[in-house]
Image (cartoon, rainbow over all chains, first blue to last red):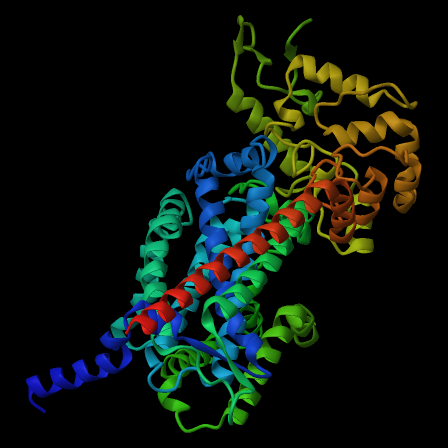
Length: 366
Length: 234
């Protein structure tokens, strides 16, 4: 195929995904309608993830005024925020809870969008940017985990980076050295130290936010241009106006989420879910406390990693990544019924590994 | 007070300010003021006493808590340093000044309750235990570590998190860290103490949404009216 023809096809593909004639207030807001059916609750999950992201931005900016990204002061600055800054404990606690809730809502959003076949033509780009947003959200979690520079933060990051290096043994030829090089690039020095903290801080507060804003922009534009997907086989009960009916309902969901987050942030310190030695300042010469593990949203891959050979997890992860990105084309002709069953199975796996991963690990490892 | 000591006589009382006296046979004595030598002596003695691992002062209590609650606690529950009192780091015996050594001596002699000990190797909770029950009863409790929480005053709550210190000790959470505690108890205590703020936030959220709802409906109605007027004109 000649180049002009290729370019023409790309142009046609993009024109169908981003129709210029629909880029106006009337199409994107006034005339937009949302189907009402038994799975309508799924339409609120994306908005909920967006709400938690906005909370993260606001609370993150507040924390930025006091946080010191140096190995000598990071932990002390976090302690200062918690114990001496007025409202600091609340802001920090809301930031911790909202990060978990954002990741949870992004995961549920992905599963519901999958079950509702919200990836079918012309919504492929909406889906792919959604998968990218999931990856960025996980990266936010991983980089933010190190910043308080306490025992669990540094030791869990070391384990995570060590796993990257171990991938090298399964790669052929010169590629064997690549994971170690990648680890060193991320780490910035021989071990997790100041360079790592600086890099993770830069990623967490500048690079990833820029990345998420750009991706989110394309994602939301695509959602508004194409409207909500039908969601179910057959006709929905009725259609409701996006503005103001659905938008107001969305705001009410945000109100409930805000209250839940506020009560959690005020009454339940996120750290109370762990034992206190994990939150002592990291001391390279001191003993490592028991119970070092990643955040709960990595349990679905962490416990299998502990139980199975690394190559199995590598293969599984590569397959999962490929399937996630390729979903609009792989499941193009799959019925919604089958997709719902697959989404329930995936959701059940995530819940079981998150809640009972440790017990399953002990069951097999003794 | 003389600050000349023999290394072997009292390794637990060595500190960075002490002076070592070495005497050449038939010659004049020399004094070597050296942190390094003292630290080396402590390390050598420490290794001789039981290897490089940190030494726990009263491991019975820690072992009991870990076994009964499943929570991994460390020496920082009662001690200043997370690795226990033996060593040369701040908060450990090898790092004490002469004045602190004297405090330590007084605290170690507080066999009866209410002696107000201020041991520099113990944190506020460790000192609270010795003050509440006395060193004698504390040492006796080593035989039945599970009974220690029952011996402590019921009303004391050093970190003011709403959970009494005795309950925190029994549950393996830290009585001096406000954010550490049984999650349900912490939530209950936090909810009750913050009820006015929660009710105010609820009122603000409900009223805000109510007002916003009316505003948006107003915009939509205005836009619709404008549209109808335009259609009528056409």
